[in-house]
Length: 70
Image (cartoon, rainbow, N blue to C red; front, side, top):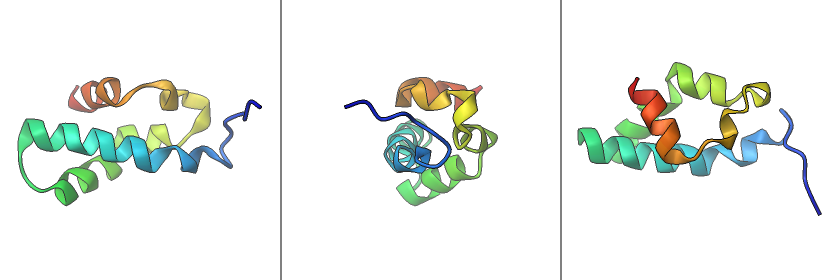
């Protein structure tokens, strides 16, 4: 069974991706995990990630982190 990703169900993928990106950010910059997570959630990248049509949800955590760092 294949489930299509839509704007209505994309939210199911985001917490796991956000946590993984936040861990990478914390490893690179120090600070708390909560601060790293807040940084990611308030980024322009996360706003784009929330939109299914950008297809950023296809990217893994390393690629998302590298994009965040740019």
